[in-house]
Image (cartoon, rainbow, N blue to C red; front, top):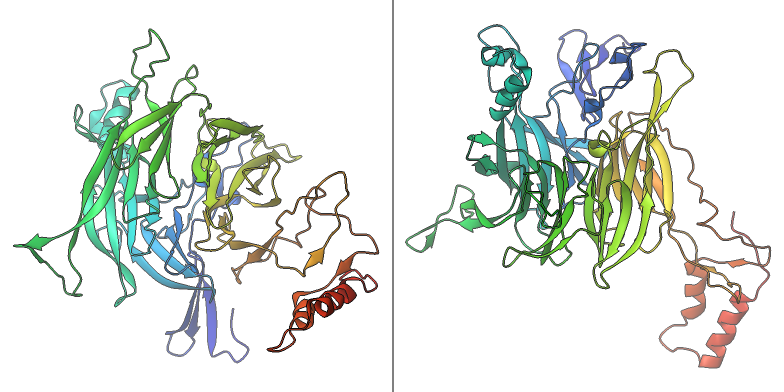
Length: 556
C-alpha cells in the first residue's frame, strides 16, 4: 500500500507485522508488530477428495502463560515464520513473544532454543535444519521464574542410515535420538527479558536405552518457587532452586543477585501396571499424563492415560512434602485425558467425559459426556484446551468442532471451538461462545476471567460483565440462582472482530416484569451518604424504602 503523498509505502509480512518504508531512502520508518503465534490457514492444506482426515498436528496447543507479576503480559511461543507452501507441517516455535494486553502491542521477543538466527540453517547435504520446538511454558507464582521445555527430533531424511528394512525399527531408533531440555529463566528487569539460569538435559531419562523421554506436563507450585514435571519414564519430579554459596557466602552475579542452580528436590515413581488388574503384569506405555497442584501446594495430582483400551487409567494423589503417594484413584475414567485441575475442593477431569470429584467428601459431583463431532477420542486429546481460575473458582474448556460443509471434498470443513466456562457445582456451563479453533487458553492472574488465543492469531480477553444493582424477588417455592455473565474483548486491533454481542442463555437470565426495579450503585450511595452525622435508623429506612418503592423501570 502506497501513501497518498507517495513518500512511503507499507508492507504486510508473514509474521503478522507491518513495516512502513520510505520510498526515497528505502529505510524502515515504522514497524508495527502484532501477535505472531501460529496461524492456521486451511487454504494451504491439500484439498484431496479421497482424504478422510485433516492434519490435526497444526491444531496442537500453542504454549502460553500469563505473568502473575504483570497480569496484562501474555507470553507466547511463536515460530520463526508462518507456513509458505501448501501442506506444510506445523512449524517449530523456538521464540518467546511477550504481548501487552493493556497497550495492545508486542513488548519483547527472544529466543528460547537454538534457532536460525544463531546457528547455520543449512545442513552439509543442503537440507534445511529443523529448529527445536517449545512444548511447555509455565511461570512461577511470583513472576520471577520462567520454566520451558523444548524438544528436537532428527528429521526422517537424516536417519536413512538406520534403515534395516523394518520401518518400525527405524522410527523407534529415530525417536530414541530425541533431545529434550528443561530450562529455567530468571526475570531481568534491567534488560526486560528472561535470562537463562539453569538447563536440565533429559529431565526424564531412559537409562536402559540411553534416550530422552518426553515431558508430558509442566506445572508451577502455587505456594512457593518450584515446578513439577511428569514424563514418559513414569516418574513425577519436583524442581526447586538453590542459591550458590562459597564458604558460606552467597555467590552473586553481575546484577547483584545471588546465582541460583535448579536441582531435583523430590521424585515419585508411578507404577507401570495397576494392582487391580490381577494377573496383568505386562508393562503399559503411557499415552499422556497431566499434573495439578492443589491451591495450597500440599497435594500434587497426576493422572495417567495408558495406551490400552482395556485400562481406564489411574490418578495418584502425592504429598509434596514427603513425595509419597497417599491415594490412587481408579473410580474416574481418565482415558483420552486432556486436562486436570483443582478448583477449590474439587478435582476436575477432562477426558472421555467432564468429571468433577469432591475431594473433601470423596464423592462424585457430576459427570457429563464430551461431544466432539467428526474427531476420535484419541485424536482430540491435544486439541482440547483447559484452564482453572482460582480467583472465582471456575474452569474453562474449549472443545474442537469439526463440522463438514456441503461440499464434494471431504476436507472442506468448518473448524471452530466451543468455549465454555463452568462452576464446579453445576453441570451446565455459565457461559458459552463459538469462535475459530482455540489454540491456547489460560486464566487471568489475580482476577476473574480467561485469555484465549485462536487460530488466526487473535487474543480474546473474557471477563465477567459489570451491571447495575438489581433487586429481584424470587418465587416463594424456589430460590433463584445468581449466575455470572461473561463478555469477550477482542484485543487484536489488526484482526476483524468475529464475535457479536454476548447474550445470556435462558438458564442464565431471569425474566424481569414491568414492575421490576433497577437502580445503580450511585443512587444507593446518594441515599446512604448524609455526611459525618448519620440519620436516625427510621429516617434511613424510609429513604431506602422510597428509592426501592418508586415506580419501576427497565434499564435499556
